[in-house]
Image (cartoon, rainbow, N blue to C red; front, side, top):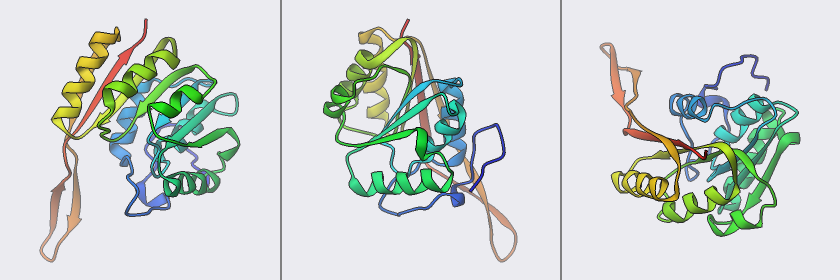
Length: 199
């Protein structure tokens, strides 16, 4: 499938899905990718790649001169990300690694321009600490979180480690759903998008 547009936000239904594998939804994905401020040729790391929606869109943004690494502890997620990357024709500049963060991050012999941390790992502090070690100076980290505890732990860890220009944005998305009598707005869980830079 070809995505002909230069902005992120591929509709969720364009991706192959598995209900057991998490996915960063299109509106949140578009905001998270904008917070990453991806450039052509960047090296990107997607920690907890899940369905591969962020991995695929980041790959489209970095182009053929960039590279996106997707990491997930679940084999099913790695396989699903691979299928979605193939579907969008970007598998050639994606590297998929099965393993659990933060431990697996130290086995990757690369430095990254941008790191996306999806989901709500209980090891968020350790993942942020590992990210500091593998991100280039001037690099950006963006974290999606649902739980307030994850937000608190992430902000605390980023401040303590030395990330600068921290931002936190709460996003509440409502999508229209047809009913018998009209359209009702169905609200999704609030998502927090946290970003910071290594200067």
